[in-house]
Image 1 (cartoon, rainbow, N blue to C red):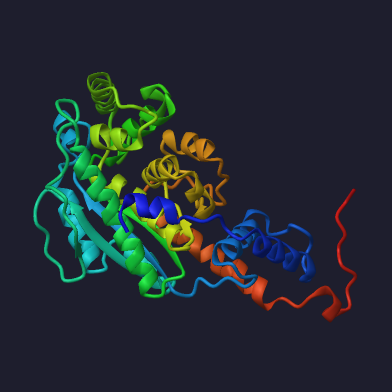
Image 2 (image 1 turned 90 degrees about the vertical axis):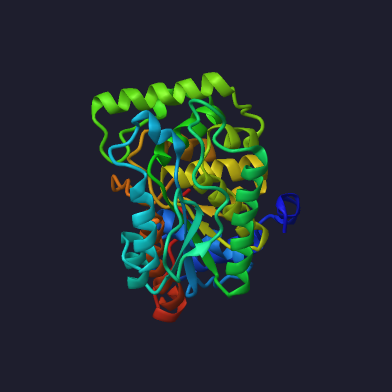
Length: 352
């Protein structure tokens, strides 16, 4: 599917299945609403998969790896060579997200969508659009055509996941400088002040944080991205990983796959996808509240309440994978618990 085909293909989730799932939670022998946001997430899975009994046994996390030219402005603690190193570690299954995913029986796929050098590793999916973005303080991060190609790369990977029988997907990312790009995207789309959405990333000093704020403001003032045109925002101040994830979320919705979101960069990508196609929102499950300043703003803008608040900010998809482990636990109860009438207990009634 191309971008317009994917947008047209997204259908609303099945509300009858959501209602049936909520009814089952009322019937099984637990207090009403006692699993909180987790049981609402299961009801959402039911609506997306169009069945009262959703399954997430086959699941995957796809990590979009790309470099950001804005690192030239001293906005990171380390150099962009780290992106390639971690991407290759992902290819060996040795990054944090890969190890977490393997532990819960989840497949992981690193994607080179824009690493600044060629990377080695048989497991790395090679979808390079360009060798990193340009320095957005001097020129647009990428061309509009490249932004569309990155979106359509994500759509293609979502289609591939669906064709392989995956029932749930997560998006992850790796790219030195990508909290700068995500803060710029967030400010452009929401109108928030740059200092309010800019954090220390992987441990910037106060001086480094000041440089980061100035770089983002410079890029926004120079390019004036149109908040009503998500592709304009992407190509002027975005990142290839953000664009790839946005397309991945859009493609997953078009294929009827639920998506568990990760942290601030993932949520910036989700906001791009929802601005392109509002119906995508029904396919997104918020995992956690990122410790980055833009994290809560993005969740509020999307209208989501996450079920993990742990101060996480690693990225890679780690928060999403942690949330999948929690979904496994609640589904074990949902599928295995007897009903009130089967155990001879009077069912709880809603309070009036």
